[in-house]
Image (cartoon, rainbow, N blue to C red; front, side):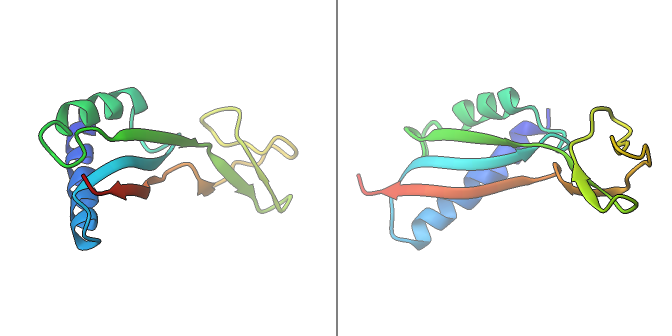
Length: 115
């Protein structure tokens, strides 16, 4: 369950950023997770709920945005959302090796306040 270590690192980054901005409370964290990131959003939420206790993020809300897999077909010169794991272009059938999105694991924003 690598979501625990991922959330530990994310919380560490969030808390350090909050302190650098003079805040002692985190109200909200927003993350983007790609469909191919290998992260289970429910497990990440569970880890967040367990790890935030006793920190300045204890009352914070975690919002997770799922980012779809988007591939690029060089033959058709178009982007597409693959229907299968093989990333086959729906127009010409060529397999794409060019993944444009879907691997992200990003902390995109923090909402901070003072207690």
